[in-house]
Structures are given as structure tokens and as C-alpha cells.
Length: 238
Ligand SMILES: NC(=O)c1ccc[n+]([C@@H]2O[C@H](COP(=O)([O-])OP(=O)(O)OC[C@H]3O[C@@H](n4cnc5c(N)ncnc54)[C@H](OP(=O)(O)O)[C@@H]3O)[C@@H](O)[C@H]2O)c1
Image (cartoon, rainbow, N blue to C red):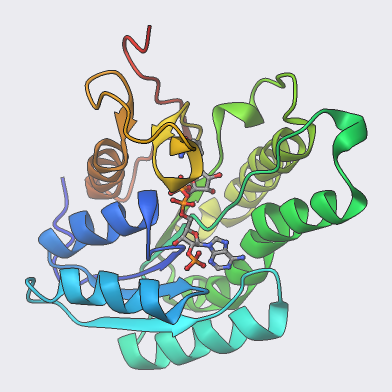
């Protein structure tokens, strides 16, 4: 196992949910952080929570859908951090409804966020990793990227695309010692899934912290090895 202390990571959507839990877990390991999100208020909240750890934390407000926006944010964060060792492409959204109910706008929004967001962000980070001949990229996909279900055509299409682009990129950059992997979780209890019915029983559903701890263990593997894809399920959600 390698130590993560002193490494530098950028997390998109690091202000809430899985991204925020990952930021906290990485900070515990001594990783310096650059966090991207759309809301200044959410970014300030996670920055405040991270202030208990002895790491540098920088935030940048950007919408991953817009290439110029996210490219500028990555540049600012990279300049502040020095370089980027770890990129967690986590920002994402859902779009649910039967096929004929989903509008073209719904499709564009989910594909721009979940797919093009990863493309834009990775294009801005990857050249530095190739120059340094090392790096880690984790793309957060979903179980919906492995299996289509009723009412999730747009979300599923976006996450199937994430799996395809990740696998191709992984093959391209292995020769530069860069590890690119996907995680395909089933339901994780966050704002995205909690809905109107409020809190769920935490023993029944995967928590964002579980995923965050798992990501730390992936990153700690010696650089010569990596786990290409991981499907995380709740043990007993029934
Ligand atoms: N929760 C689940 O059950 C589950 C299961 C499988 C996969 N996933 C995937 O895990 C990832 C995180 O999900 P989550 O449940 O943690 O969601 P969440 O609680 O809704 O948090 C989403 C995060 O992404 C940011 N974000 C959303 N759209 C953005 C955009 N266009 N540009 C920049 N930042 C954006 C949000 O911040 P702002 O709102 O402030 O921008 C927030 O920090 C997503 O890719 C999701 O598809 C989730």
C-alpha cells in the first residue's frame, strides 16, 4: 500500500453527497484538495468541514457542462495545488421519467453533465498527468451504466457512456502509468436519491462514506496495480 499524504486531488461535485464524503476521507489521509461545484454556498460549507484537517483546500465554482467554465476552474485549482495526482470525476445528475416523458432538454442536460462534464474535466487534467507519468482518475458511473431500468433511459445512456469512455481512456493511458477506473454503485443515500420520504435506514443503504473509504483503498494500492471497475451494492436493502 502507498501513502496518500501530500498528494493533490481534484473532485468535481465535491461539495455534497459522495464527492463531499470523498473529500473528507482524502483529507484524513493528508491529501490536498481542489473542489468544484456550482454553488458557492455548498463549496463554503465543505471548506468549513475540511478546516479540521491539516491540508490545503481550494474551491472553484464551475458547471462541468461548460468547457470554458470547467477548464478555467481546473487551471486555477492546478495553479494553486501545484499539480494534480488524483481526479475524481463525480459531478452528476439524474433524469427520471418514461422515455416519451423525457424532453430533449432533459437528455441534453444529463448527457452534458454526466458525460461531457467528464470529457471537459479530464481534457484539462490529463496532459499534466501524462507529463508527470503518473496519476489516478476515478469516474463515478452507476449500476444504471450496467443495466437499464424502466424510467432511466437518459441516466442509463449517460452512465453506459461513462463506462465506455473510461475503458477506452484507461487503455490509452496505461503506458503513462495512469490508472483510470470506474465505480458503478447501486443506490447510495444522498440528496440525489433521498427524495421526499426523507432519511432512509442507514444500515440498509450504502452511505457516501462507504464509497469514500473504498476509493481511498483503491488509491492506496501500489501504482503498479489497479481495480478497473467496482460494483458496490447494498447488502440487504429489503
Ligand atoms: N446517490 C446514488 O445512489 C448514486 C448511485 C450511483 C451513482 N451515483 C453517481 O454519483 C455521483 C454523485 O452523486 P451524489 O448522489 O453524491 O449526488 P448529489 O448528492 O446530488 O451531489 C452532486 C454533486 O455534484 C455537484 N454538481 C452537480 N451538477 C454539477 C455540474 N453541472 N457542475 C458542477 N458540479 C455539479 C453538486 O454541487 P452543486 O449542486 O453545488 O453544483 C454536488 O456537489 C453522480 O455522478 C451520480 O450519478 C450516485
